[in-house]
Image (cartoon, rainbow, N blue to C red; front, top):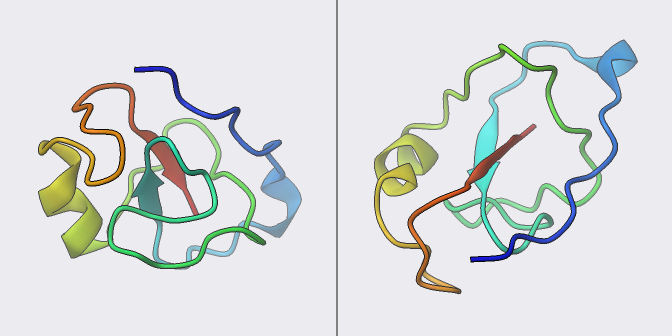
Length: 73
């Protein structure tokens, strides 16, 4: 699978909100949450959306791939 380019990381505004996971569409988390205006979280910060966590190990509902999922905020 080829993933879309990740948004540019902006760690200056990170405030411990719920983090999500995306795959081929960096604007939409696996759970369906719109993450288009949110910066990517810094490396080492885990994601905590329980729906994204459950779906992360499953094939992507859009592209069908199960690898290379990225973390977004």
